[in-house]
Length: 211
Image (cartoon, rainbow, N blue to C red; front, side, top):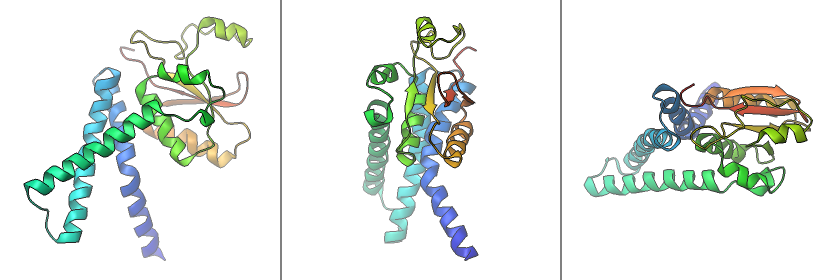
């Protein structure tokens, strides 16, 4: 049983590593080198590309007892690039309306920082019932909600044109799912805060550039 447990953990690690490398890598370039949204994301993609290339080479080696020649290397390179670009494009631009509180959020999400968008679309793969309740805001939105205006809110669009925060519904969800959700974002490098506001939700934010 212990051997089986270790084997399952190993394969889980292999499975989730590319996703972690993509998002955590992008946040590393964002926070460490203060790069813009897209250069940071490209940095995470390059790290993930290397990991996928190693995976494909290992898989090819297990099947043929050989790493292959130049032609095989080119094929693996194309496959790794295809997987990464396909995943990122889908994650950035095709978040389902079923995961939004209302249809107006689709426009707000386009104004959300790409790394935040990709992180939330990734967790939706596992937590398919996750609901995004808020993304970008204006000062007038706080007044409409009956809340004090927060002049430093990361829901506002920053100098680069992107908002750096979003809210996720935690009401009518199990405590285990909410704990998993919060720790997922913390491990990826986001700031998290559970609070009420207009209803119980998890506030996710990314530290803006130059701050």
